[in-house]
Length: 258
Image 1 (cartoon, one colour):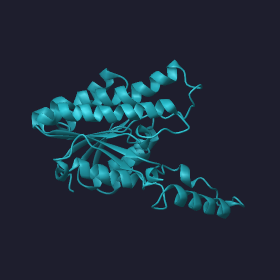
Image 2 (tube, rainbow, N blue to C red):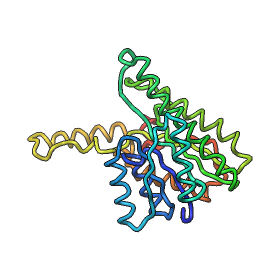
Image 3 (cartoon, helix red, strand yellow):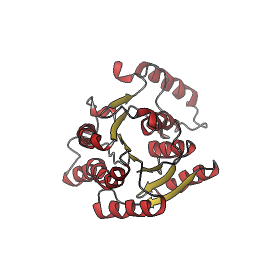
């Protein structure tokens, strides 16, 4: 699944899943535009790792809730690298507030970033993809789009909206050879699962409790890794996936089966 010669934009490339996708796409030959808004140290680390492996990347910044900033970012990418072949909409906000802690400001922040940001990025890259009569758009959603949880209902609402955005976009863009697919990860280890101090006298007990919990909640016995999501994203971005569009792929180690 080579991505050689492709120009890819990953939003939120400074942390977690976005960082993992950007690094893996670069490993497969794509020239990477690494987007960030606030995670400057993270995106510099992403670029350092890509450059260290011999890949090609450059950094761009924008607030994805701001249409003018997105348009300027895409123009910069097109001037520097050419029309974008692959868009990975990943940048998102998750506050983990319960229903009554949310207010109008946090609601707007999450929808403006997680939904409007995705929609605006799609709009910005479409003219270039239409010129090429091909393109790959990948939306990072969540299993929260399918099942309720006991935390952050507004975040779950945004992820459900992303799923429908992917379906509607897939129908409208199919005549231009542009595919739109959604990845719905379950729990992904972005560093939070490794916070047990080795100096903690109960460290081994806590690690054993975590292993037991993971076996109960995840049939494959572990949570996901950014690389798991990245490898699926690379397939969707490749020529091999040209007949797949409008799909929402659950990637959760089987956790929703339990």
